[in-house]
Length: 214
Image 1 (cartoon, helix red, strand yellow):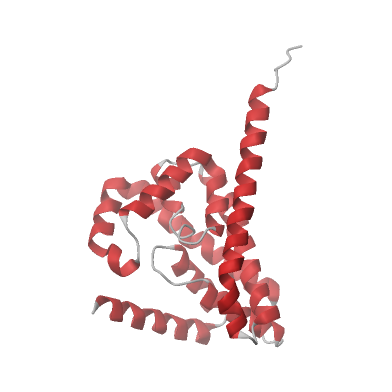
Image 2 (cartoon, rainbow, N blue to C red):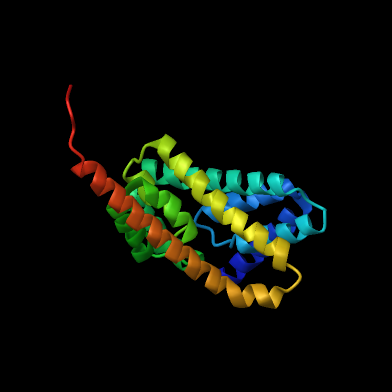
């Protein structure tokens, strides 16, 4: 029953997004960046198709998608900051099943964040199953808000660009998109791993560099 209601709610959101144009894209991405399971693919790929048809502007769509993701991430950040881990766990225990979220997913995001620090908010936006949760540990651990916004914008901007371009170049072939989004996600995970190794290498190098005093 709850799953059916959620499905109806998502369909309603999509109809509103389609009616509102750029504002709808912004609002849809706000929702997508919270814990409500509204996939960004069903918002930005169709937008890419409309860009290819000349009915929308690429930069405005990208701006709307990125800012929407940022606002949604900020909502999660402050929920985690003010409610705390215990309250979030209680909410997840009650409503996690219909939102496809559980304590383990949040715990894994928190461990990932603790291990790699602020850059996680950039990388997390590119990893399936993590992108809408990574803001929670940032709030739990009181990450610097300016850095949080910067890394979120970079990650959300990159992800939005990829989806828009997928719609722009391949939107007329929905089967091609559905069959290859998994490959796109795998490539993004590999890209994230490379970024992590580079980050660790540069961090260790900076620690080992001697400090010269004049």
